[in-house]
Image (cartoon, rainbow, N blue to C red):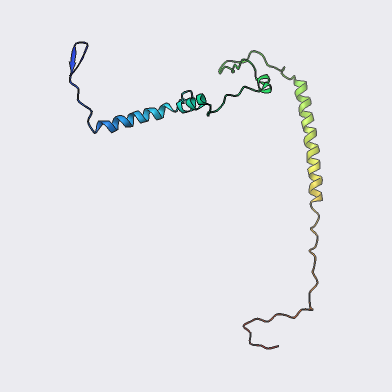
Length: 145
């Protein structure tokens, strides 16, 4: 009997069937607690003893290349100003004309390469027939030379 806050409760001793279930539950809880990245008792003990991974300081070039405050762009809110001004209609027409000229140069170079590619392939080299050797007989032939 167990008495808590004036209430008497009957308790049963752990049965043999419940012990494996409790052990399995505790083992599963311990395994799932290992999924937490900040809680790793094996690593913590190994680091405390000196056998675990050592925390290295950040190299200077990495620290200089990263901003001090990593603020992320908010989703769904427009950016107040553009970093570069938008192009005017004249600038867009000039860029299109430049791209058209570049395309025509590339098409001309491709046509010239296609013309060069139309040359017929060279004739294969004809090897001279070697008549100095005797023709070999079949081994199962009954002819005699």
